[in-house]
Length: 85
Image (tube, rainbow, N blue to C red; front, side, top):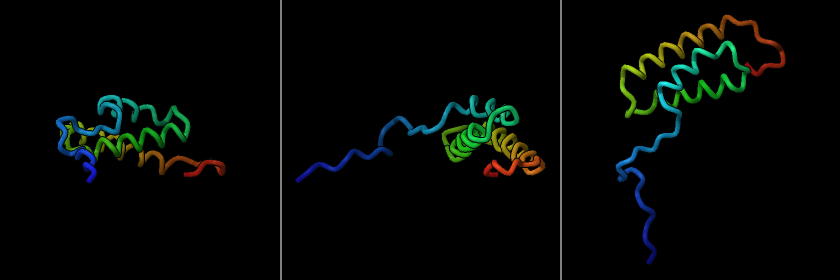
């Protein structure tokens, strides 16, 4: 009989799969200055932080506000035909 793999949820350390929330917040300020791929990466990081219940609600609210504003500005931008969105 084999031993089952240890349950990751039982560990004391939460699985963090994103940069520090403060860094994500700061990165969202840079969306207009970075290329499309980097901007997409910043947005992915923000979504990961928003899904992390270990991050304070105040920080998640601030990130959500900044991400929402950035997404709104992106809809107003003229996109080059070679960009994916």
